[in-house]
Image (cartoon, rainbow, N blue to C red; front, top):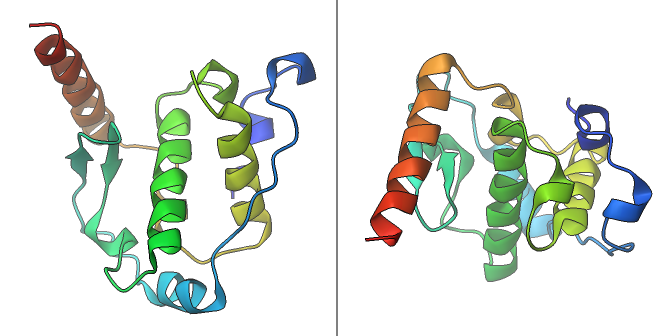
Length: 139
């Protein structure tokens, strides 16, 4: 698994102060870990979060807290997909980095951790959608 600190060496002075990160409840963790990776799944762009998601990474049975943690993991993974350090995030970079590292350390079996590196086609889809989102917002 990828450790965010190994990907992006960020000086301590640029990180947010220590943030306490809670992981999934036992019920949500069982749901997350019951999800099965589908290598044939295709990504879709989530315009609210500005990231790619796959259908096998999500279950509607999660609690509201579980949904929020999953959304936050997508946000954190998106920084990795874009090859950007967490320190470049406008808000909460330290939180997202700690959440990502905590989830990796906890060895959570989530299909999304199997999609750290994007194919060229998926990276193109992500970048194209982000660029289109910005151009539409400025009109």
